[in-house]
Amino acid sequence: SGTAFIDVFVPADSGTDLARTIAKNIANIYRDLPSPQSVIYLGGSIGAGQITETDGMWWVLTVSIDWKYQDIDT
Image: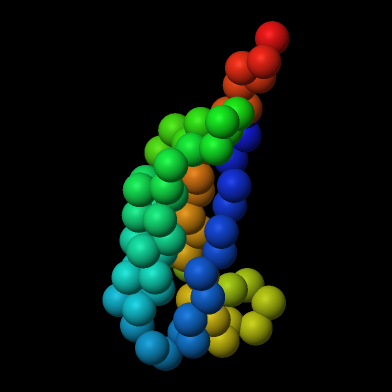
């Protein structure tokens, strides 16, 4: 089992709406995606977001997708 982390970056002065829209679209892709035979998607979440620490030019929002691998052949 594990978690896939997908970071969404937008310019810091563009507001958070664009990042949140993109993040929600990413989470919805996994919500509607049929699971391959051995991988089961358990859901996702969207973080609170923050300004990047290195230069402050970007707003980053992290999407987390939880999954687990199940060996159905054994």
